[in-house]
Length: 368
Image: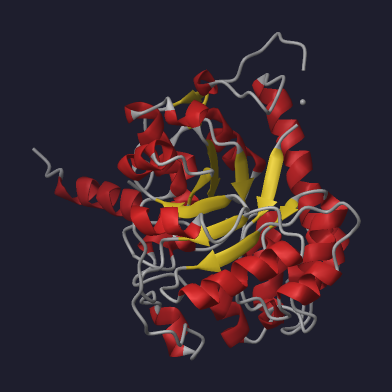
């Protein structure tokens, strides 16, 4: 009898292998094989959000690209954010008459690393694409300068970080209100700096070595400092979502900081699924946002099917910003087109009310 060890070993190796680390190979490198390093391909020849990362990687100095791309530790959480969506299959519904969703551009600092005009392209591109923009506190051009670039009627939220200095926090909140921000996205998943090996290698990691924290009682105190809604950004377990409901939090944002803080942290899709399985009432008791690993319209639909109200994208728009506002607007256009096509093919009649039943919520074992 022949040994089964070699084929089994080969099968094990095949299942463990990953075909890509960043964007999927859809022919970008072959199509733009003659594109010199340091140059951008024509914007109208980019066909999806992953193309913007490939374009940015070819165009930017390696340190600048690394600032956006880096994840914590061995970057397993970064990869998991991307791969989690592929573990669950759709259940398309046919023979139905066939649409709208809310997207957000979540906070990411140092826009100048991708474009010398900093966040100018992000705020203007978000306006052109009619999506919400949430400027980071550590943006390159500052809160007031971003506000000055707003289009008439454009809605912005303002991101803020954990801070144990009430004077500084009060100043941030006051400035946010004065510049017209409609809410504060208060990041709670960065009590310490992230161990970003890739970023440290190029000297583009955070220089903030301080430890800080917040508590539920401190959140109650923060509410006395402003009358703006405070969204807690960085919820990563069902118990915290339930406590947010009990505490009357304005909204929660499922996020693991793009996999940049703790390697091994769960993807927002996994957190949303955990909440849906253990406390589904949360989605009707509080507004839930999410970001992390979203690259395709289909990824957004899976989050919406779990009850998420608005879906954020960070890195793709930072990469698109190498083209400025035109690039960001193009990225929004491509994503909206994907959403419409995917929804139609799935038989979804209203993206504001996607049924849980459109996804088979049993993992298929891919990369798990």
